[in-house]
Amino acid sequence: MDILFFTGIDTGIGKTFAVGLFYRYLLQHGFDTITAKLVQTGCGEISEDIAMHRQLAGVELLPEDISGVTCPYLFKYPASPHLAAGMESRTIDPDKIVAAVNSLAAKFNPVLVEGAGGFLTPLTSQLLTADLAAQQKWKTIIVSSGRLGSINHTLLTLEAAKQRGIDIIGIIYNQQPETDRIITSDSRNFFKQYLRHNGYQNCLVELPTITNLNQPPEIDFSAILNSL
Image (cartoon, helix red, strand yellow):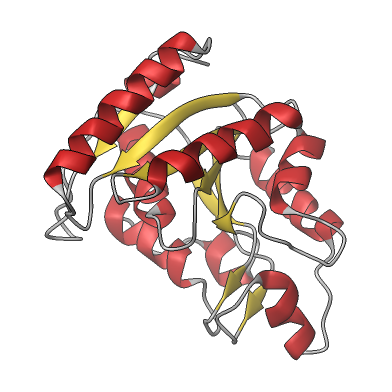
């Protein structure tokens, strides 16, 4: 497996919960795994998303978290990475991100890498998140939802990945926060049918509502693992 990349159809779609629960599942099944974040904006000294991964998995922050290897870029302003970096007169070096991820992959398998925002979020004025994933040939998981508009955004993300030759190995269907149940049910069924009819394996995993971060629900991610 080595490196699995998690992207979303939009910002605030639930990538952090998906990565944290996938991480928890792998740890429970004996994998020597770790999570990482390409870049985090709107935070201070420690990536809040990395901290959430650890909380959901029931583990403490790791030495790699404290040293910054699991999230090599942190910016204070909550904006797209290229803008947040520019506001601090800094530039994101994709080679630094890749080096950090690869250093983790030398010790852990798999490394679960969470993106920032949606799939086409710019890391720099010249580099989109999707292009970095394509360059590194990262197998990719899309986090979607049942809220209105998600079908369009999900299919656009699939098209963007296909254009770049990126291997999509699954969709995690986030059902929180709860929205219109009719739309949620129809979107779920639409995605399953679309995946089946377009050559993707049966690799949709549903993410239920989380009411207690310290006691999250047990989720079976084997459908995605079996697609590898």
